[in-house]
Length: 264
Image 1 (cartoon, rainbow, N blue to C red):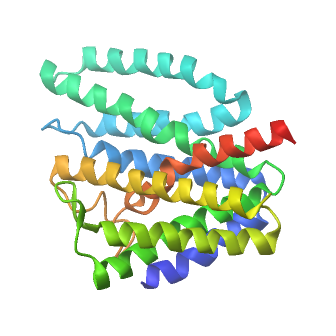
Image 2 (cartoon, rainbow, N blue to C red):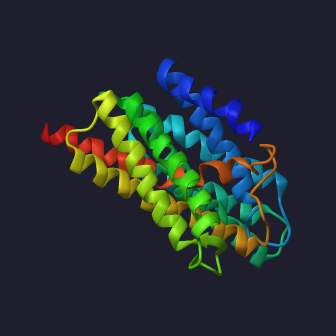
Image 3 (cartoon, one colour):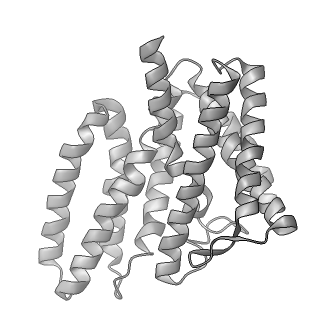
């Protein structure tokens, strides 16, 4: 709880009042830390710490690369990093099955984390982009909060019992509805929404996609047989545990704003 009280005002300040390059720097650091934790969720038995750091550094480098060169640079960058990862795998002394699993996991991390998190700074560059980025955070935070308390109070039907036994259908519905209400109020007072119906639609979409992101990380942790992705944030697990619900909605909101700008 204390970590959240301290971190939330800092995040809001960074989103609203700092230069774009600081947002870029923060998103790059977040990507590096999240990739380090993600590497620990791999199914290979023997960790290669040097390859873990290499994968995290190279994956995080995609964030500034895509900002300066455009999102279309992802595919050639992916091809280059795939080649580098294969070279490392060929030169490592591990068993072939271990190298194959580790390499595959590293490549998945580029698509799962590096690419979506690369949309953060471009999203903030839209008209009212800072408010839209804060809108995204508020909707996800509200979704998680409403889902948690409603699930504890009214939850009876399991949402995904194998992947995340504590999540319930009732909590999920309350989370999406609560997030939609908060998003609608925020959009109304900041003037960023075009219409209540459209705002509610994108808010619900963000809530549902965010929930899918939460379950996706739970699937990875369940496969790795761990409770949290890391221990960096006291009482809240790791960085990946804190941003899992944001990963998929970030590019969703980016392309929604791009479509709005195209039709404006």
